[in-house]
Structures are given as structure tokens and as C-alpha cells.
Amino acid sequence: MTGALTLGAGSAHAADSAYVMTYFTESTTLGEGTDYGLHLAVSTDALNWTPLNQNNPVATPTEGALGLRDPFVLRKQDGTFVILATDLKGTDWNHVSQYIHVWYSTDLRTFTGYHRLKLHDMNTHSWAPEAFWDAGRGQYAVIYSAVNSSGHNVIMVNYTTDFLTASAPQVFFDPGYDVIDGDMAVGVNGVNYFYFKKNQTLVGARSTSLAPGSFTEFTTGVAHGGTEAPTLVKSLTSNTWFLWGDTYTPNGVFYAWQSTDLSSGTWTALDQRAYTQPLNSKHCGIAPITAAQYDNLVAKWGAPAWNRLKSYNHPARYVRHANYVGRIDEYPVDPPTDSQWKLVPGLADSAGSPSSRSATRPATCATTPTSSGWTPPTARPRSRRTPPSTVRRGWRTRVGRRSGPTTTRPATSATRTTCCASTCPPRPRTGRTRPSGSVTEPRCTRERPPPAGAGDGRVEHGPLHGRPSTTGVVSARRVRTRRSGRSGRARPCPRGTRCGSGRARCCWSRRPAGCWCTAG
Image (cartoon, rainbow, N blue to C red; front, top):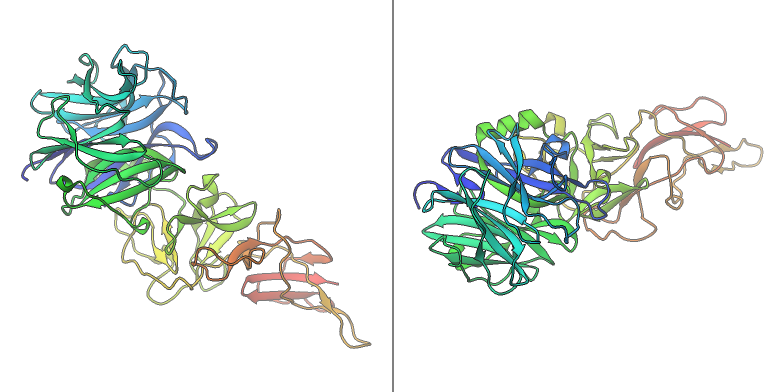
């Protein structure tokens, strides 16, 4: 294959070395973390993604439904970009719109010319619009899902040169059953490949022509539960192709497959360790970009100020806190902010062990001991395009993609958690009685923690209601909180010191790290 490869997401050029993703966000409860605006993420390998603008939208529709779904990015023949999206806010699948949202952009840093483009006059929707260049016509083809006179969803097509006006709609692909979410790879060794959703699976069709009605189904379906929104991406460094899919059982989990031969129609599921989607992302579009465009996007919108802690042994799970109880939950986490952490070394000890502080509840931390062969996150050198992301002792810290060499550590080396304050919260202790005639003095004890409940934010290791770990990552330990002030009198004390003379005593322990003063 020579020359540029035209994909559904635009043309790949020799200078390309990275990718941009468009998406919207949606939580499982449609609450916090849901935003029907245009979001961007970037990647250098098309697998591990860094959300931009703190995972907030970079543009929002001001017409129609005032929201979008299924955003798609196309690099046009002149090197500029056009964004297309479904005119729908929320999940009203009966919403009727003959229009799609359109933006223009020269660099994805600014968006101009926003308008809606009318595609048809039918009493139905215009779902998941995408576009590709049809060289034989000298026009762009805009494909989308709509219910026509057949009574089921088919893939329609309109042709345009400027995305301001479009030709009359035609049926592009109708296999006789309901199909939505078409995605195209054009000119792969002389063959065009078209993937779509069929019966909760992703299926491929192909044709040597781009003419409407010329595509024939040739693959079996791939899926992980109910799967939709296929996105084909060609690696910029090898002959590998990736197929992304978006699931809705549960909602919003991306899965990826790979193949080195599109003509075979066979796909191998990737291990979830290999990829990480943007937080709460839904129905993406992906286009190749240059290194300069990558750098400019990160400079403009900024990488996240938070990270997510991803289990290495069980990569579907992330560290989160809920009601001051530390947990290891399967993605998606709701609310998503419970899984956001900031890297702050040395919260647990003076040695500067890598530590993570909750981005929303700073009294909650997760820490990992430093070991030879790797360094705390602030000490790790970064390349000019690399946000922080490392692998350490059973946990993978994710903002998007890996940076620098990665080190796999035994799963039994556990992340531990502690309080974040310079002096720990107060904690009562049960006093032990000395021999007759002596003074009763509180002593440091290691009693079983009380049942979990609303706490003071202090988090430490301990058995979680006696249940063993289900993840294999933290061995028999799970993170939890303890509540102070159950009985007696207590006050904080400087870490590692005594409280003074008399009956008060400062108790301090390295496992878990903590310090407190108690009195009988």
C-alpha cells in the first residue's frame, strides 16, 4: 500500500505520530460525570488516552437539542478538521431530528462556524454521523443511521463539499435488518471496509467500490456484552489495526480488539492492561494527528490534574473511595470523582513514598512504598509529550498512557492507605490496667477496627468486614476507614513523638501509619 490511507477518521500522513479522540461523557446513573458536549483526548498509540481540559467539554451545541452524542472528527483534504455529532441530549431514543451538529477547526484548539446541517425530511433521527472522502465523486460522504420506509434503521448517505449543504439522502447500506453506527476504512489494499452494529455485536462488510448498496457482510460479530459504536484505527507504527467498541451492558466501557489483516475479518481481544479509555467516555471518533498538533492540544487544554489507579492483575478494577471506605471497584465508578487521585509523594512517611491523595476528599490517600528500580512520580523524568503515568506494585496509575519504562511488580506487594494530614486525626485507645497500686495508662493497641461508617476521612489497611480480597491485588488486605471519637478523649499529636508526661500517650505505628494521643 502506498500513499495516504484514507480512513473514516481522515487521511493518515507520514508526519502523523499521534491521535485525537472525540467523545461525550455519561455516567451509569446519568448524574455526575455526564456531559453532552464535545470532549477531546489524545494518545500516541491509539490505546491509552489522556483526556484534555480536565475531562470537560471544549465545545457545546447552542441549537437543536442543545446537546450531542456520537461526535466524530474528520481531517479534510485541506488538512483542517470538521466535527460531526448527533443532535440529541440525553437518552430519548424517540427524539426526532433531521439535523446533525457541525463545527470547523484548523487545529482543534478553536472551533468556528458552528451550525446544524439538515440531512433528510423523514420523521426520524440522524444518529452517529461520520464522513469520508469519496475521491471518485470529489465529495465527502456523510453516513448516518435513520429509519426509512423499511421500518428499521438503515445506513443513509448524503454527499457534500462544504458541510453547509448536502445532496438528497440515499440508502448506503441495508442488509434487511436493523443496523446503526457505521464506520469506514477506505482504500486498504484496494478494498473498503465498513463496520456497523448488528444485534449487539460489531460486524464488518466490504466492497471494492464506495457506491451505495455495494457492501457485503463478511465477518462474524465481535462483542463484549451489548456492544456498539465500532471505530477502526490503523497503527501508525505497524500493520496492526484496532477495533474499538462501546458497551452499554454495563454502560460506557470500551473494549478493543486487534488484527493484522482486515481482509481476514478475524479479531483478537486485547488485554485490558493494554488500553485505557478516557473517564466516562462514550461513542468515540478517532483521527491521526501530527506531533506538533498533539503538543499544541496538550498545551492549550492541559492534561488532567488527577490520575486513576488501575489494578494490574484485574485491569477492569480501579481504586476508589465511597463514604470514606476505600474500595477496588470495577469500572465504571459512580460518581467518577471517587476514583480521581492526585500524586503527592511522602504523605505516609518522611521517605517520600509515592502517594495519591483523593482529588475530591483530600483526607483520603492511597500510598505505595518506594522500591529499587523505580522512583516517586514527581521524580520520574517526563518526555515533552508525556503526562504522568506509571506502573507500580500491582497498581497502574492512569491519566492516559504509559510514560517511560514500566515495571511489573508482584501482585502481593500491596498499596496501603493512610490519613493525609501532617498530624493524624484523633483516635481513642483502650487502656490496660497495670498491677495493683499503679496508674492506669492508655497503651497502643491493635484492636479490630469498628464497623465502617461515616468517618473522619482517615483510611488505613484492615480486613473489610472479614471478607477476603476478590481482586488478588492487595493480597488479604483491603482499604477502609476508622471513625474517631467513639469513646474516651483523644487529640492529634505530631507524628512519631510522645504527648508528654502523665497519663497521655502518643501512639504511632508504621503499619498502618498513624499517630494519636489518648487519655483514660
